[in-house]
Structures are given as C-alpha cells and as structure tokens.
Image 1 (spheres, rainbow, N blue to C red):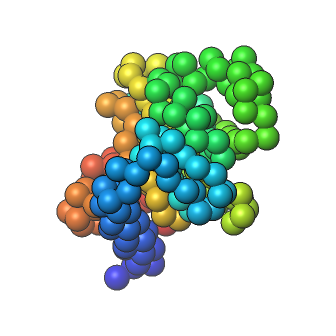
Image 2 (image 1 turned 120 degrees about the vertical axis):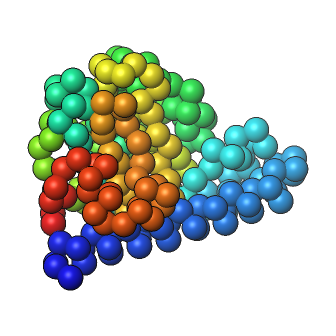
Image 3 (image 1 turned 45 degrees about the horizontal axis):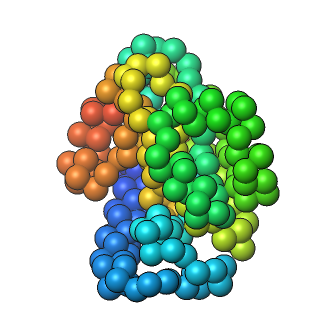
Length: 206
C-alpha cells in the first residue's frame, strides 16, 4: 500500500468516526428537547428550547477542500468558515443563503450585531487546483456553539451553505452540482472509487 493510500485511509477513518459520534449526539437531543430550558454546560447559559437543536460542539481543526475543474464554471470563488459563540447568530446563519451571507459580511452586519462573538476563516478556491490540508487555529476554550460553511458559487444557485459537522477532520467537495460533504456512504466505496468521483487523481497533500 502506498503512502498516498495510507494517508487517505486515515482521513476516511477519522471522518467515519466523526459521523458516528454525530449520530449519537443527535439521538441524545431527543431526550432533552422536551425540557422548558436547557443549560449549556460550556457557557452556563440557558438556551431556549427552540434553539437547542442548533447547539454544536465545534471541534474542527483540519479541513480538506477538493474541487473539480467544472465547479462554479471553472471560476475561482470565496469559501468561508464561520464560527459563532452566540446561539442567536447560529440561528441567523442557518437561515441564510450564501448570497445573503456574503452581502451581510461585506456590509459588516455581523460586526454590528455580534461583535466579538464570532470568527471567520476566509479562503479562495480555484477549481481543479490542489489545495493543502487547512489547519484552523481554534482555541480549545473558545466555546463556539455553531458553525457553517459558505461558498460564493455563481453556479449552481442555491443555499450553498453547510452546517459544520462535529469532529476535528472534515472534507468538502466542490463540483458542477455545488458543494457537499464527503460522507461515509461515498467513502465506503473505497479509495479508488472516491478519487474517481472526486475527479482529481492525487488528492491534496497526498
């Protein structure tokens, strides 16, 4: 087995573990969603029952972005990782399309309404260009309660928004169909099938 294959299999195992933990946490919410108020053990705040499903435990440290040549009609685009310590801001983000988000960011709406309560990592993606694994500097004690990925894609039009999954390692793919997470279903088809579907032999960092 080559070094490239070993590194990819390590990535796949890490992401599979992440999705398993996410499923367990989702089941746990079923037992507490009936409460009038839920205490956030990290911040000590009482979260309204209508927003408890938005509460996340952000652990993201490494991000791998893979883009097909046809993504966004082969044009470069902005990709933002947005983390927030405010559950109301998390709700706002959950209802925004990418177009609405990027307009709000450009207009400093978040700075006005949630100053000091969020962090944004900004990247530029060039379709088909290999990108290194991105290591995000997130302080362990930051207490972020929500996070989303936004891609400023001109094609296809749509939400172009993904809620950040739990776990330290995440892989995001861009294609002519838009943005998507690399899920256990896709990974279960094996390394060769994954590379074929992603469309770029020799993934970044391999």
